[in-house]
Length: 272
Image (cartoon, rainbow, N blue to C red; front, side, top):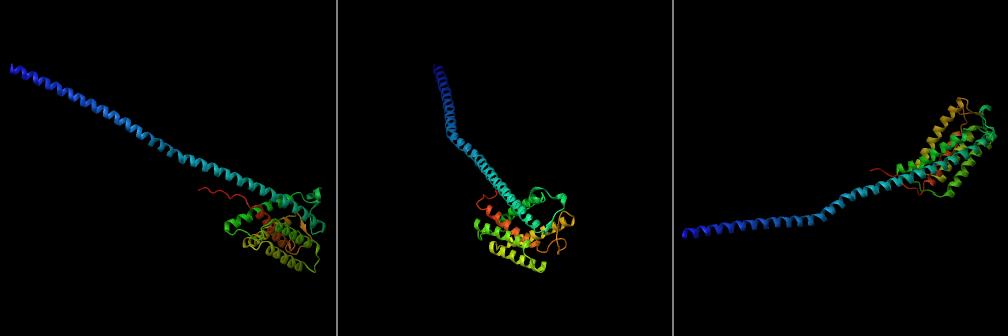
């Protein structure tokens, strides 16, 4: 009997131990599931914030790209508008001044290149208009590159007076009669420097004016040498000695027009 009681007691204790271990395992599983649920609930906002943070650089990059594209478009539109205005101004001035030179018998064209329109060569206004567009765009570009913005007499009234003085210098080259071409050339050179001093006074304007006069004189020498047209009474190789003065004052005048047109335009975007 005692042995049976002890066996029964040990069996009951073993059963109770197994039951306790099962309860402990169940409780551990429940705790693990609760921990997983709590962890997912805590990590989901952080993941959402991380997702938003991951999307924000792409969003800012897209907005910066669109703004850069818009600024590039605006800058290109202003560039085209300025080019058209400069071309029209240069072509019109070349037509008028060239007719003045032809009427005063300063320049003469062969009969086969003379057009019936205004009795002038057809290619003169387009060539001068293209040159005016290039020079007018080059002046503000050089000012920006040198870091010396032109601020002297920046208003349209000054630009119009500069145009009037330039037309007067060109008119004087055809109208005034001097004892020799040297006196006329020195007079026009003084007037051209006076135009630069009155309406420009910048080192970039002086340098570009001299460069334009030199290059334009070489091109004119080449054209006259090949018989495209000619000057009466040449005294500087194939042309007149005062012609570089006209090119210098014309470059300064067109440069002032280009600078005035460039005021208030958006800056060219830079790609970082």
